[in-house]
Structure formats: C-alpha cells, structure tokens
Length: 92
Image 1 (tube, helix red, strand yellow):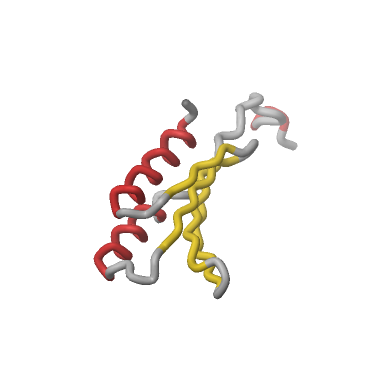
Image 2 (cartoon, helix red, strand yellow):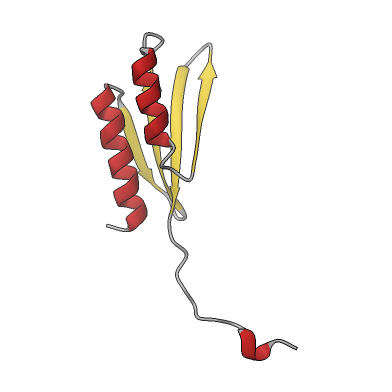
C-alpha cells in the first residue's frame, strides 16, 4: 500500500475509534477520508478529531442543513520522481 494509503487508513482508524462512521476513497492523485459528524460530538472528541485530521495534507468540514456535517481529509499521493531536469550543471 502506498504511503498515502497508509496515512489515510491511520486517519480513518482514529476517526472510527472516536465513533465516527468513515469512508475512504482512492483517487488518482490522493486518498480521501470522509466522516459524518453528529451534532452531539463532545468537546474532547472534537479535539481528538482535529488532532487526527491535522495529519492530512488538507482537511475541512462541510455543513448543510440537509445533510448534516461531513468532515473530510485528503492525503496526496507522492509524485513519481522522473530525475533531475536541467540541474545545477545547466544553469547559466
């Protein structure tokens, strides 16, 4: 499993441990983690959730009156190295 998948799986596991239902999806350039956040989440649980998503490359909270609150986090996949192009020896 790529490093991004491992990081996303760790984030998902920790969010599940807090009691949040979690979805993980693989995309071409990133792995995403989403969790539904209940209105009744305690302040201590919020602190834990924020510590967890801070490990992601990006995160946010989508809140609507129709769908409730969805927490999301994105872990970018590493870009494959293609070698140094025009390195120091090519500078003018």
